[in-house]
Amino acid sequence: MIDFLAKNGFMEVGVLYESPFTSLAPGGPEDLFSDPEVDALVEVLAAVQAKAVPQENAA
Image 1 (cartoon, one colour):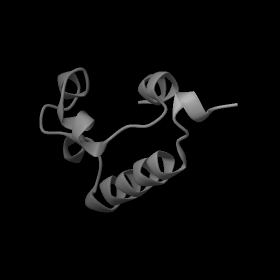
Image 2 (cartoon, helix red, strand yellow):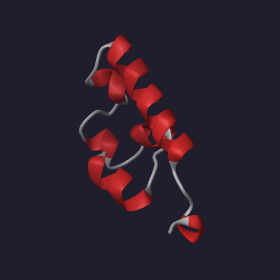
Image 3 (cartoon, helix red, strand yellow):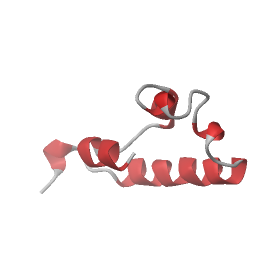
Image 4 (tube, helix red, strand yellow):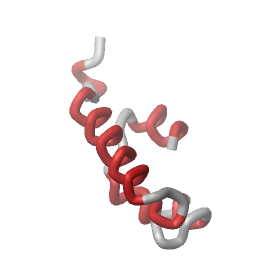
C-alpha cells in the first residue's frame, strides 16, 4: 500500500480487492484486519485522497 500511495498519490478502497493485494488477501482487507481496522483504513485512504494534489497543480 505504501508503494502504491507513493507512486499514485492516493488509493481508492476498491483497489484493495484487486491484484496485487488479493494475492495476500483474496477476500480483501477483511481477510487481514478486523472490521474496526478496515473502517479506520477506509477513513485514512479517504483522507489521503481528499488532500491529494493533482500532479499538474503540484508546486
